[in-house]
Amino acid sequence: MSKENMEPVILVCNDDGIFSPGIQALAEVADEFGRVNIIAPDRQQSAVGHAVTVSTPLRSRSFQIDGRFHGQAVTGTPADSVKLAHDQLMKRKPDLVVSGINHGSNAGINILYSGTVSAATEGTILGYPSLAVSCTDYEEEADLSGAKEAARRVIRYILNQGLPGGVTLNLNVPPGPLKGIRWARQANTRYVEEFEGRVDPNNRSYYWLTGRMELLDEGDDIDVNVLEKGYASLTPIQYDMTAYTLLQEVEEVEL
Ligand code: MN
Image 1 (cartoon, rainbow, N blue to C red):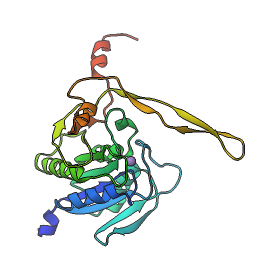
Image 2 (image 1 turned 60 degrees about the vertical axis):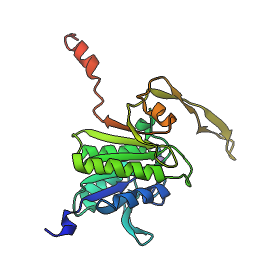
Image 3 (image 1 turned 135 degrees about the vertical axis):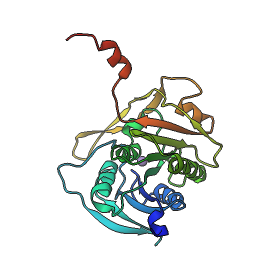
């Protein structure tokens, strides 16, 4: 087998779209470990969660970033992109799926709404070791140097150690240089929704979601607080949503 065939194949996806600076930063890191294949939404898809497209066709077109990375832009969601990559677009199946670097935090309940995390989760569902990477700074010009270094360390870890089936790693990193990475659990948070109501030129009401995240949790081990202290947080997450504790309690209850 030639050296090229031994190299790991790394699928890079995101939810901010193929032209976001974050995906290029992650592709640069992945490129240090193997052959990069970027397959990602052709436009901004933040907060679409694990949505898939079922009633319209999906299309993909080739694109280049800087003449350096070749990829496919998909007209669907992050989860669509990974599914299509797996089933149709990749000649060799990936050894690793990485999603990001998202522009914005995916700590706490953001995990559930995040397209970035869902692309990685889809990778896990399909049987590939998968990692989601997010920078807590929303700005397009955010300093991603720490996020790149954290991603580099975690990718190295996954390629060396592997990941158990059904588990995705969720990495969040503050902007700027990396202070360190801490294992953390998902903080219990929720949004205090605030809709701003306006009126369109046709005199119809429309609403714009704003809102802020409320912390219902405490402790040094939660992702939100790890980030607050300036460290990157790394959380193993799973898509099996069964509440095992309750299931055990109610096992004998007859209905
Ligand atoms: Mn995003």
